[in-house]
Image (cartoon, rainbow, N blue to C red):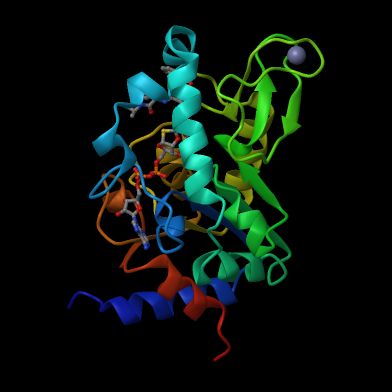
Length: 247
Ligand code: BJW
Ligand code: ZN
């Protein structure tokens, strides 16, 4: 049988979505790329310029908190003027299209919320929130930049970004919500993620084992492409709006 065209695959995904009422979307840095947010890997990726182990691990923060905060303050400056793109907006529109729709994001940029998504799970935290390394209090703090070494108003200890670094556990309550959503969904879309960071990387494959139809939307194939039903090659900001367009 001839290989299906990309357009044919997009139409197939649209048909699958039309026939179901429980959908999960998992997003990665690629969905925000068209808003101007740097991705982590690939051309221009953050981890091409900086070593993750120097900046995104608890050990790095213990060793040189000032350097880590400099990195996150720079990222806040880059993110502050950016806006959601048509991919974010299409996912926000999907929320009201299905009886059950769960958006799971690895992104910390807050652009899904800015697009209007409400039913969402942030796996790796949010750059606009900080957490006290002493009393563990978590608060929203949108100052750009924050002081070089920001401290907790309640106990005076050093604040840290409320994000999940390498080697840190994801919140078990969040992982439980993810398991429930993946268990119950009929269709899952895996969008703009390179599929190398666990546990997010294997969530699509888990959904497929549980019986979901799983489609990947990415500029290029990933290590998990072969484990899915469909691989749509393209920009999420172009493919996703088509999925919510009438007709
Ligand atoms: C487009 C596009 C367009 C571009 N349209 N597409 C099992 C095996 C091996 C190791 C582990 C394992 N389990 C856990 C680990 C350790 C580790 C891990 O996975 N390491 C691997 C790298 C080897 N995982 C962890 O440490 C996690 N914790 C954990 O599991 O705890 C328990 C445990 C610990 C230790 C050992 C065992 C168990 C925590 C992971 C935290 C990740 N944190 C970061 C930083 C967040 C804060 C910050 O931003 O500063 O999260 S790293 C970074 O990568 C960020 C992202 O969320 C994450 C994923 O990146 P993503 O989104 O996939 O982006 P890219 O850039 O990689 O890809 C972009 C994609 O978009 C590309 O494919 C493009 O083609 C595409 N694209 N434009 C569509 N327009
Ligand atoms: Zn505190």
